[in-house]
Length: 288
Picture 1: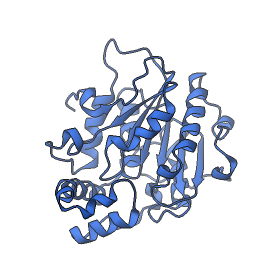
Picture 2 (picture 1 turned 90 degrees about the vertical axis):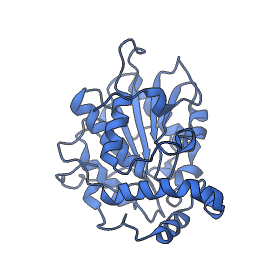
Picture 3 (picture 1 turned 180 degrees about the vertical axis):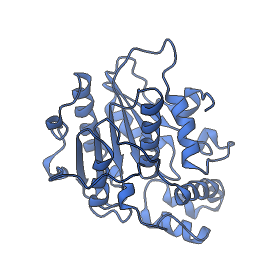
């Protein structure tokens, strides 16, 4: 894999050299690093947010968007490999939403396999686990179906699709991202060794709480599931609660390895928490 410059891939909206942990955030299909600005503002200065900026959007609009999730994961992995002389170790967490959840997982797999420096914890939002795949669910026949899909999910920026000038800029990115999702097959291998937290909307048509819960079979470490009121973009409505969850988890990780009993003990309101009960489903031969 070729070396990638971190400054090209990672946006720090609120730099905090004194942060005790950092959170790498992976946007959804069609999304950009800016989606994570509000979360970054809430977490600073305790947690520094590094938002991944995919090619083809905002200041990288002149670059062709990636049409393959594995190729994109390879490049992001290279940008996240620690460089000589980098700041001393501090816990690094990953948070990915929707397509970004699959990318966060693939990057975690690569870092564990190649450097042993995978994330201290992995938060996966709004994305079903491979063991709960829906064949053909991410395949769309044409631009009309693609735009109907994006509009139905709502979310930040979906209103831009009614502006013909903006649509000309956004549509190539959406085509590439959804094409990458349609052809994506998860990497096979052993489960990850880091704790995993699943985040789900109770009315999300893309990933039900039970489909998100199945991520528990992709780690040998503790797993927890948090269910929020809302649809696919529930994160936008519950940014403050997600910030509390991340802050509590980061604080625990900064104190040392996380015991299984502590994963669900963060400050998230009880109404938004649904702990996993019973054993996770049998481990499939895939990971995503």
